[in-house]
Image (tube, rainbow, N blue to C red):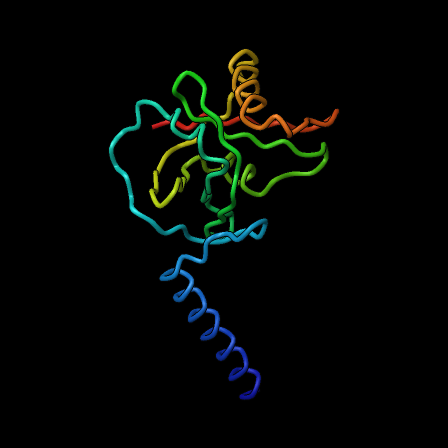
Length: 159
């Protein structure tokens, strides 16, 4: 019994140390591998026009997982009428973790360059607005094609 408690104690200590180091270093995403916390310079001023992101291929988004750890990934972004939009297209019957997280808790942290923006995502339900955002995405990423029967989520960045 003492051996089992020592092993469990060592595992807990290692896990706490790992999370402490990850919190300090950030442990952001790498390529297609998700990460945890994002690090950078927090921008608190409002952004009136997000069209500067048209020159940026991808941004990084941090959502909050159901198990209380952050989940960060690289995502496509596009602007329309000065608003920033994020979209996710994937085969029907599957899901994206960051989408699920954003639908459950829309508060996110966005990293563009070395700047961090704490914002809220709003799921776009208006078909016209969604189509305009997707048209902006097609213009920015002409190589991306939407397969038939895909699930599409479009989020507007608010705040």
